[in-house]
Length: 237
Length: 121
Image (tube, rainbow over all chains, first blue to last red; front, top):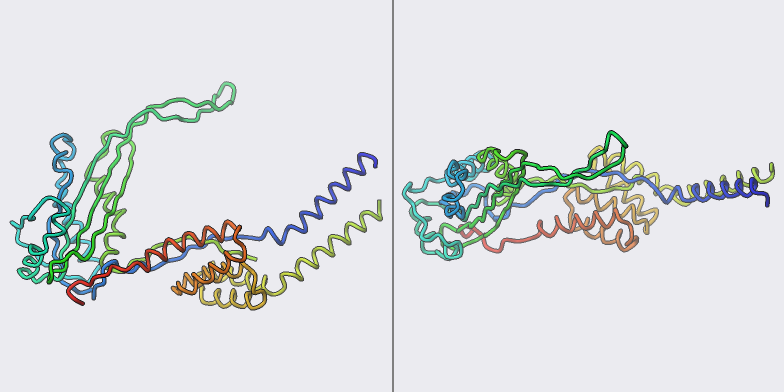
């Protein structure tokens, strides 16, 4: 067979193969669904809730990191939590004595302090009591990073080391939820968030709220149903 | 030369006809179902994908689409069965596998129970 004719037959065969495969390739589309998330706690929805203090896991670090001294983590978190619960649930937040002290700073022992939580529930009328631990860290993540670089001289791609200033904000909450009547722990859950922003002197309070707002849905989902957006694939033919 | 072009044309027409005859109405239902699904009309989409399955019970794509529509409508137990069926029919399809993995993650946390009840309620 002459070369040109062989080429033509080859091209024709390829075309036939492509045409046969067309129905198999098919189309795919990505769709977004809103999925419900059941509340983690089996509540009626209108219970009386008390927000007890949280153990601060970063207390010891405050002395070392001056930036943490500007953040009243306990007050900021309590204010955030109270506001979110009042705004987005039908739970009734009851006030606790201002001089309330936790029986221990150890999280495991706190979870076992049944008598303390029962007494607090009886004193305030709270049906559920929330406590736990908080950790907030500001980390200097500055350092050398590899960057792609296209030379204007020869147009080729090179790699170079550049110094990038970045700050990381780490937030870790452990929630302990107690039954105000029996004092028993009914739920323990942990949420973590890490945010990174450019610059070495990023504001720590702003970082804290970025962490909190990204955890908002998960925190509220302890008490009420929430929606979550999810992506799935559907075939179009 | 003319003969070979004619033969090629004949092959193309035959292939096209056989391809589209094979997909029959299931493809039409899937196509319409996916159009309404993208508009958020999940009940109608589920109905269409169900029709496609009636035409072609072993169509993995139709089972996958029905599973997604059922999931979007909150019928998670049925969605699970459909995802499993789709995966059984075409275990190597990466889209079906991804959908099933993501659904399984969601469904596990959805069905997770907390055990105790606050305030004895």
